[in-house]
Amino acid sequence: MKLAEIMYSMALNKCARCHQGDVFKSKNPYDLTRMFDMHETCSHCGLKYQKEPSFFYGAMYVSYALTSGWFIVWFVLQNYVLNWDLLNFAIFMVATIIALSPLSLRWSRLIWLNFFYKYDKKYSKKINANQLSYDR
Ligand SMILES: [Zn+2]
Picture 1: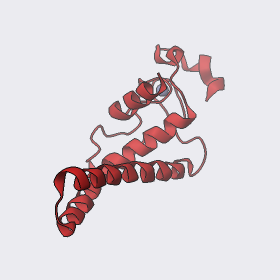
Picture 2: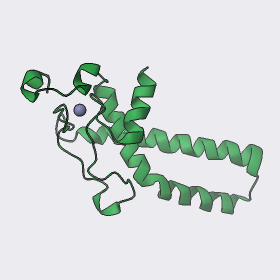
Picture 3: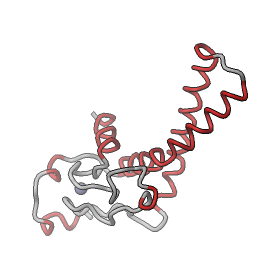
């Protein structure tokens, strides 16, 4: 299932096509000095992650959707469960958005990558890079 494949790639920082190679150099999204550092190609299947200049600008739309989803969840919780006063709620919401921003950045880029490449089992096996060079 496509959603399960995207979730797997997102959660484990794995290549969208083979689910073997890492996309980001650091496993920890909160490693703030290296949070933008990505591998250029997949170490397993050779997929070039940035298929054109500024490719990951599109991930900003995904990040916007993720953040909007987070706001909606908090809005529903506030209205039906929490009922905090508005100032406390706003402070807590902004703090959680800031705290989750490294994770949001990583997930948005991985989701964006999954929009363009789908998981293919033939790439997950250990392969000779020359065999699939035409697919890059
Ligand atoms: Zn790969």
